[in-house]
Image (cartoon, rainbow, N blue to C red; front, side):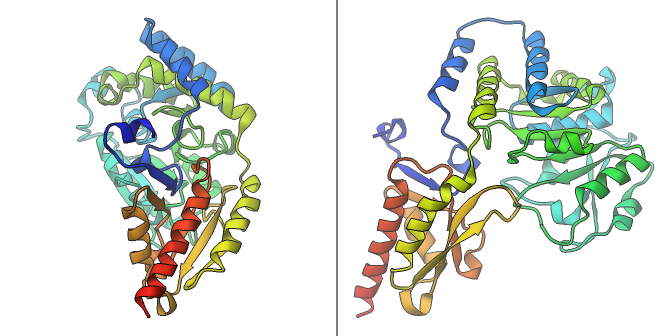
Length: 372
């Protein structure tokens, strides 16, 4: 029985991935020991923020970094930084940015809801979102046409939530930003490569600490030193409402050090996923196959297709029964309308995968009995 069950909540099997609605990650005990030691001591917070920035940058290859409470806070703080450039009067004034260059251009296919709209985070920082192109196709000329005298920055969202086809590539967005002398912000919240986007030429790159890195609730912005200084300045403005505690800063550092030497290899999940897929393919009304992450990350999942004409239930009903049971089984349900859901192995613990397959077996057999 885990700690949440002891306070009256049911156990959750997380086959959905590193999702905020399920607490994101299971943090390693050694990481939490570092956080606990930090929590038990005092420190000069401004000095800590600066030192953490230096140590985070050793992992990203950037000039400097700014620690945040989350990737969402990172978006708002980055936007505030490119608008205010750290000027104290403007920092205190935001999110009121009237009369300033405050527009943030992003591709329409990147204007997504990841639990909250990206555009909301832009507005929290004082920005005005300007969408370029269409939802399924965007061209460089459309991005350039959206740039005007009030443009503060370009934003590129690297996420499985974003449209993957027909979008302007990152390299083109960087070229456009350079030609117009504008900063490019990359939201790479759940990305696994901590150096790729800085090396490519992005000015500010935002990561979640709690997703791929398995840190306590945290995030960071990494990039060019003058803009990072402007990000840190926001802790005297809108960032005050998004501050991160000393214990989570040190937890993030411990998790980054661990990540550098124990980074998860998604290919190692394939054998156990394939074994589960083979078992699911023996169940009445269900079939499964291996799938690769839609955003190109080295993540593999089991994609389960529901055949309602055989099972007597559609994918929506199957997912609801899995989620409504005890333990509650959460799967990736983005394509339920197409009759499929996916099992993400990264957050599974112990015999969770066997329990999922067993629950599917029970569901298939119960449906068969009810159909007799």
